Structures are given as structure tokens and as C-alpha cells.
Length: 356
Image 1 (tube, one colour):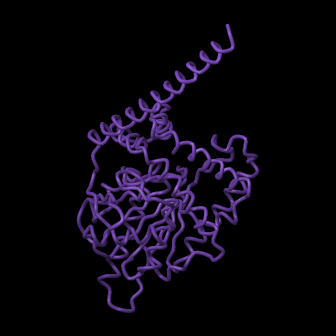
Image 2: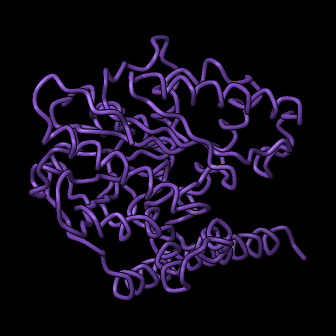
Image 3: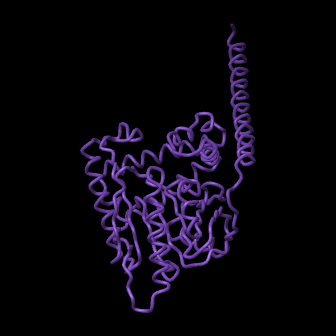
């Protein structure tokens, strides 16, 4: 083959390969768009979309009564994280859960939002969604940052609080450095995820299916969780939350005290001593995991100490998601704080009821 023919053949091959790549990209975009449209039709929002100015957030409320319980999920979680708890709480008072920006059915944010910005979004959502106080705030994991930030900015609206395996404002400084480095590795995975999601590759890889295995949900509710996680913007929303959490968890000052606010802190009784699969190759050893657990337990006790009436309880049969493993414990803790808030609302001034 002459050099000219060789060059011509290579050129045609390159054009064909480029065309194939373009075709695959377009096919991926069309596949993801069509599948997402189908998901939205099969799994519409459980509640309503409330305009707060910059974006609309999904708010779902059940039940009646005062105080209103507001659920704040952990990183990447929203309304569906409270599937096993919210309706039960709605039997004795009004119970509301919502999806933060970029999560669930809510509109995305263009950048990471600090805990102050998230709590401001929640404030505007409650106002625009006609959710009046007093409030009992329930925060799981990263959600603990947000409910404490809300209470710091609007203390008069908060009648009580339940923290479920809550994050701590100093944990990035106190955790073993190997664990924090491993978490940065997870951020790199999410960067890849947000790049591939628009082309349907995360959907094809069943990324969300793996995360939902073993959830104690009905199959229909599990499929709804998969659908919202398969949204094009989900990885970007989760990455934004974790990036902001890096700063929110590296504060030098301790968490702000809560005075005599009724408070129950629930923490996990089952803690891994072996590094999780996502820490593979990170240098995190069983000894480091044990040190991590010790720091975490100490921080949970400190969170209970934020209120003079704080109570720390161990969910002996639960891992990090207590609302999945022992939802009855979360419901009971919320009920007790709600009853305490009602007692205080009906008590004469200067009385000081104890937590039931």
C-alpha cells in the first residue's frame, strides 16, 4: 500500500471512529433523557414543589398537630430517607420532610451550599410552604449540621430537636487523617459520576441499585429511590453537599450550645471495625477504624451535652441509618420530644418540665 493510500485509509478510519463516538454520545444523551422522563412519570413527587426564589424545593407533609416535625436527611438523602418514620410520626402530629437542592425532586444549585445557606433555604421553604412553628427538628448525619444551623439563626421557632447519628462541626479535624483522605477519594469517584451521568452510563452500570440493596422498603419505594438517584444531576448534587460538608466539619469552634432545648441524640450501636469497601486501598486499617469509632462516640456524647436537657441513647441494633434499622426508636424519640414541647407550651412561665 502506497503512503498516500495509507494516509487516506487512516484518515477515513479516524473519521469513522469520531463518528462512532459522536453517535454513542448522542445515543447516551437520548437514552438518559428518555429514561429520566419515564422515571418522572412513574414516580412523581410525593408532595409539592415550593418556589423559594432561586429554586423550587420538594416538600412533603403528612398529619396534623403542633409542633410540626421537620426531617432533615443526611448527605444525598431527602424525603425518601424517612419512609419508615414520617407516616408514623404523622399519626400524632404534623410531619414534614423535604429534598435539598439537587436531591430528590428539588431543583439543583449551581454550587456547593454552606450549612447557613441550606438552613436559609429551609427557612424560606417553610415560610412559602405554609409550615408554621413551633418546630421539632430531626437531623440525620449531615442533616445535623443543618438543623443546628437553623436553630442558631431562628431559635424562637425551634421547640425541640432529635439528632440521629449526627455529624459534628469539628469531625474533620478530629478524625484520623487516613479516614479524611479516603473521603476525598470518594469525592473523586463522584466527579467521575457527574461526568458520566448525562450519558446514561451510571444508569446502565446500576450505580443506584447497589446503594439501595437491603433497604427495608417495599419494592415500589425502592424503585422510587433508584429513580431519583438516576437523575442526571444527582451525582452533582451529592458532590456539592460533600464538598460543602468538608468546610462545615472543619470548624475550630465547638457546636453552638442549645440552652435547655429538649434534645435526644441517637447513635449507632453497631460500628464497623473493618474498613468499608469504598475505602479499599486507602490505608485505613481496623485499628484506624476503631480509633474513628471512638472519636465518633465521643462527639455524639458532646452533641447531647449541647443542651442542659440533652439525652444520649444508643441504638444497639443499628448502624449509621438508624431510621432504616430501628425506625421505631426514631419515632419514639420524636414522640417524646414532641410531648415535651407540648408540655412546655401549656406550662406556666418559669416552669421547667423534664424530658420524658
